[in-house]
Length: 468
Image (tube, rainbow, N blue to C red; front, side, top):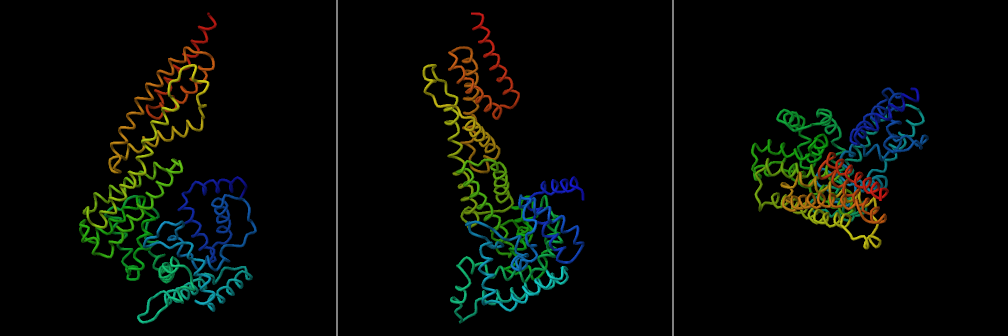
């Protein structure tokens, strides 16, 4: 391919969502492992890795198919999570993988590990990927058996010491899940192949497709069903809609009947994910990161509303209390930040006497943009206020901002017609900030009108000074 064609391919890959990039990467890696069209697959995979890693370097890095641990854990990739937030059913901590791999090589299945590494060396020396898929699957099954055996409780047998040699309590908690998913790799892959790549809404027809794909005995176990549901959630444009599967299976929206089915775990998963997103929202707000707040609020709003309308939840039930707690956490996270915005606006736009301007704090453009982001944040909150229990404070704050900014902008424009040069320069900065806020609160047309009024005020004052 020419350089231009390569750049076009890379630009296209860069525009794909991260989930699509990850899915495409896995598919090309599997194609290489099967020995299919190696030249094209290797080239596209190389460009995709450069996009994902954000670097042109590492051209001579070892092929990722040479990493035995990565090949072993490939089926777990969709379910791995980072960070310290508690995991839910259908998730595995990425941090658990290394201790388990070390245990497999040391105590769990050392012969299988050595045999697999030997096979990988032979495949690399041969220059062909033939046999890689078969060897990988054989090793995955051997590892799964060793993991499930050590993780499954046996009556009358104390395995605490053996388990403590593997890792921390978190690692032990993930053991059975790791083994179960490795053992059920084919069933999971079949489920993924029978689902659309993206499900815009879990409509009745899509529900039929999903339930049909799930109708496999190995996926119906308490251990694997949460992972199957998590796989479906990753295809959903609105992940909270996974509760519709539970409602369908219960043939009722009554929470008691839904909870009595194995699919009741879908509601627990949806609530957990809303709790996690609430924690992320709280962290972003505390750090002053508002870029993703709008998207987060929409997901939370739709999820809370969906659970409240599609499930008959009781206020005193476990699910009902958890949903109430989520709404309270969202409200508490947003309310204090919303209430702080008018004060910050007043500090920038407050009218000052000419003699006080010399001692006034300078107007920082970065601070103006930060306050503008906060005003936009209040506007976004207003859209979702009712469902998120922030209706009163949001409407009051937004109304106060509109009244104060409109009045202050008009007063600042009038003030530009007089005062000494230094005072006028400061008020011009204030007026510019006020017009920036007007653009968010009243729209571009009103902001343009006030901008022209400010220019005319300054121009008129200069003409008047020259005429005098």
